Structures are given as C-alpha cells and as structure tokens.
Image (tube, helix red, strand yellow):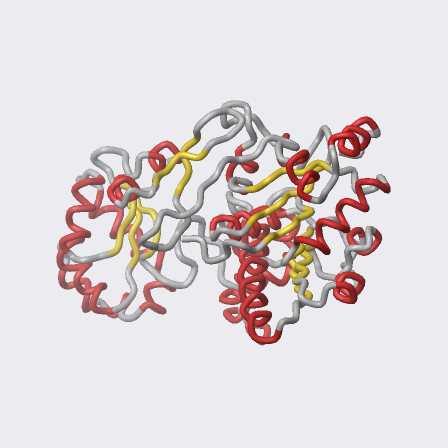
Length: 393
C-alpha cells in the first residue's frame, strides 16, 4: 500500500493542519522530510506528555516521517533547505505565518521558475490574500469565524468541537489537492500552487447550516447531542438503570416501527401532532416527554434490544477508554504498533481497505535524520559538524 513510494515531500510544518496532511502522504509511501527548529522542533511536541512522555497531537500526526533540524534563518541552513527542495522535493508543504515562506525564498513563483514540476501547498488560517490574511488563526478561532461554534452546543451555551476540526478540514483538503496535483503533473509534467485556507475548509463543512439559514432564514438551533432538524434523534435517558441511549429516525417507516416496537404504542404513529418530521421537530418537547416516560421502567440494554428489533439506528456514547477497546475495531483488526522515541505505541490503520499492509513507520525523534539527509546532499562530516557548531542544525 505505497502508491506514493518514490515521491519526496519536504514540509515546514507545525501544529496539526499541515502535519495531518503530510502524515497521510507518508501513509501512502511518500518520503516526508519534516523541517524542525534545532533544539525545539515542532511546537506540538510540547503540547502535553500523555503518550509515555510524548505529545498526543504529535504522535497522531507525525509517524513515518524523517526529522531534519534546520535554523532556516541561518545562511548555511537556508542553503541546505534550498538544495533539498530543488534537488529532491516533488512537493513542498508549509504552514508558516503568511509571507514567511516567500521571505525564505520558498514562494511558489520563485521555486517554479527553477523547478516547474514542483507542487507547493501553502496552508494558512485565512488564505494568501484578503483583509484577514495576516490575522492569527488557531483551530478554535476558525471554528468561531466559520460559524461552527454558533450552531454547536446547547440552547444556553455555544461549544467548540472536541477534536481540532478546522485543522483536520484544512489538512484533508491539502491532502486531496496534493493528490490531484500529482495526477495532473503526471499528464502535464507541471506542478501547481495550492492555497488552503482553514476558514474556507471549515466553511465548506458547515454548508448544511449555511443553506438552512439561506436568504435570512433562522439558523438551526443548538440542541446539544440532539439533531437540530430531525426528531427524535439524540440522547434519551433510561429510568431503570440511570443510563442513556442515542438513536435517530430518518423516515416515516422508521417512525411507525419506533412507535410499534420500541415505545409499544402503535396508535402514536397515527397521531396528527407527530405526522411528519417537521411536526415532530415542532413538538419535540411533548414527544420527548412521551419517550422518556416509556423508557422510565427500562434499562439501556433493554431499549437497545427494542431499537435493534425495530431496525432503528442507535449507538453507545463511548468514552475514550471504550474506543480503545471497541469490539468493531478489534474484530476488523484495525490496530497496529508503531515505533517512537518512547517505544512501541498502538496506532489505528489509515481508513480504507487494501490487501497489502500500509506503511506505518516510527514517530521520529527531533533531528533524528539530520545527518543522514545532509550526507545525501553531499555534505561531509566536517561540513555537518560545522553547521552543528554554528547551531544551524
């Protein structure tokens, strides 16, 4: 499972968006050379120490990469970086501050003039131009700017998503755009400049509530773990064990089955108050009271048994510890081990089914591959020692 084997990606990256994109390229076999600050590295290395002393974000997004430390402001290191990009790179990815890559001589126009086949992907909060270009952008801030926070949470309080979805959205669009550019280059021989904005990526993911609020209409209300525009759809308590179940209905056939088999109140399916999803949404408080009352003598497993019998979609609200032991992930053999500076660590296989085992190489230590990569570029031991003495690497 290495369709990108033989391709080299050089990346000046930190945090999540760019590392998530390039890790997926590494998953597919690309050689990913990660440029890091000497002594410090990607600042995501210091977010926490939850994985045997390593940072959870870093472990997630940086396996199968090579770490090369360069102080890109040092003339000797800058020359090494230019050589590495022009001599070896098929793709350059960066999510430095806007304009920083261009100041280092790594803007697309300057590089394409020397290497027309190069693909350059810039990832930023707001894009390469416009009035917000230089505004600082972190995941939570973009969740707010894209309107995501305004439609997430409870009626009383808006909330962010738990995972870094603005970063993930940008990383996914960077990944897919790079793959498309590689296909195009295979036909034309030419590279391409890709400009990925976190705001644009998450705004695309928020298009359903955007359209729901089209032409000045009210946006979908915040409804916690319930669905804003479909009912019943969400979390409901069970009275006999203090538990809860999460389920959702999609159509009138399921509504009739729910009334008959789950609530055991078949006449409710003909109740005009709840005829059609729009009326059920409008009467959600009244319908919720009926459901909670019906569930009051039942345990969560008993409700799930009825939901399964009625073929109603349902789910457990798993904790992180329960996801580690999820029976479906176990049954499909989705866990592997990867190496790291802290020893072997569990890692999920990349989504997708291939007959071959995918590439899942170690998470690199800071600067682990510096000497080897510099030697590839023709630097001898004395030149490498000189750069190290000057703290350029």
